[in-house]
Length: 150
Image (tube, rainbow, N blue to C red; front, top):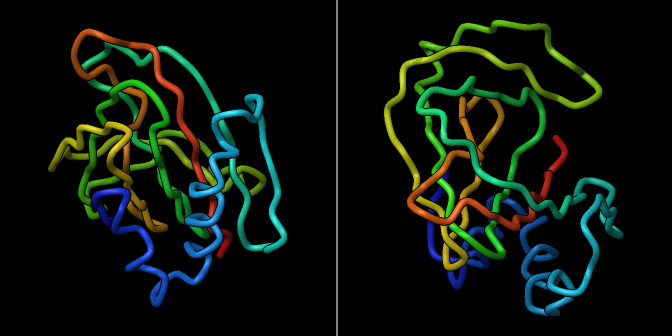
């Protein structure tokens, strides 16, 4: 997992070259005008989804992991908490969906990340995370999730 300020995203392109395209999309300002939905890019290993929702008030939520894809999650508006569990404690509670590259389960929380539009997080395959949790008063969130397809 990587958590950093959005202005530092380009520093990680040596490790994840797809981030250069992410940076270009962010700098273009196009995300603010695009409707909610899923989008492809010129790079077949990168796609993204723009979504809006109300964060969940629940204190406990199932964690999710991805087996092949990395998530780059960036809030466009609002605040959100994302809990993180250690991978050794993760126990699946459902079946893995290869189509969506996701399995849900339980785990031991080791950290909470408090997201806002000035930050980004990258969750790598196998890292349990529980996004979409309420963080403070406002519950309405607009977010883009870039998938780096492994």
